[in-house]
Length: 284
Ligand code: AMP
Ligand code: FE
Ligand code: FE
Ligand code: ZN
Image 1: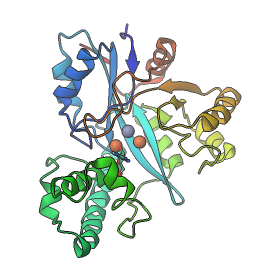
Image 2: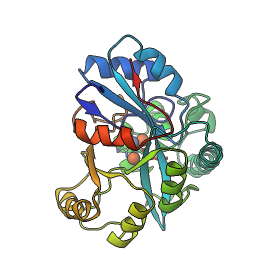
Image 3: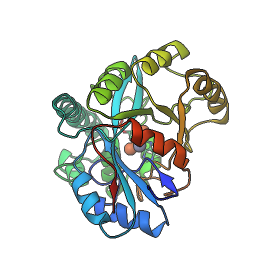
Image 4: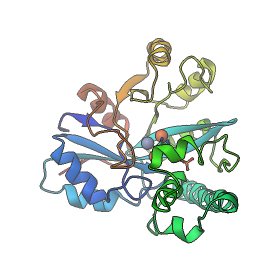
């Protein structure tokens, strides 16, 4: 039986969290969690270390990932749980996304460097070899150089999508994402889908198509979702029989989000585990 409380969304230094997978597991134990999912952006590179660190702690670890997808101009994040990490399509597609992110980050830095003292090496110094590189690492370099006080300030100014330095990166469509995750035996959940209030990039019909392909749930209990957006999506979840999950989206010191600030009900996790065929939970 997975332990409670259950937090199904957390990042390590393999993507843009500030703690290594082992430190993330220790933080989860210290926070009194019973279950944690490690969900780095577009990477499973943290799974081994996280599972090894959980051994003997009593913590349940759900191996997962937060897959980047693009829907028109919108970036749509999709949580993927318990898929086969050796699935060829997942390996190839996440490698393509990470490569696109890397070159896009280089171009963003080139543009910023015209106006600020910042080099590509400054950014690389904030990441590890296996990191899924993104704006958070550029933010950390800007903080270290003294251009902004912290990550959030960087996102509100130099790294904002309207700043003139920004560009998007390659990602598959949400429909392709759901299909890929399901084909790898995994369980897809739309991450923080109500961040924009009444405005949603994807219509009810489009979410319905994802449901037809195996979308399992909506991460409604997340600090970035607005009350108005949650209300409308709760109605949609009931209509389509979607499960509702909750999680912190912990990034260590990189964001104010704290482990366990939102959680998922044990019955929902049981259904999720029953649906998955790619990987089993790890009972540490
Ligand atoms: P990117 O994927 O490179 O476009 O960067 C987006 C990532 O930055 C997301 O995964 C968020 O976790 C992170 N992020 C977004 N806004 C903030 C913020 N205000 N403070 C810290 N991290 C943020
Ligand atoms: Fe992130
Ligand atoms: Fe996200
Ligand atoms: Zn996240």
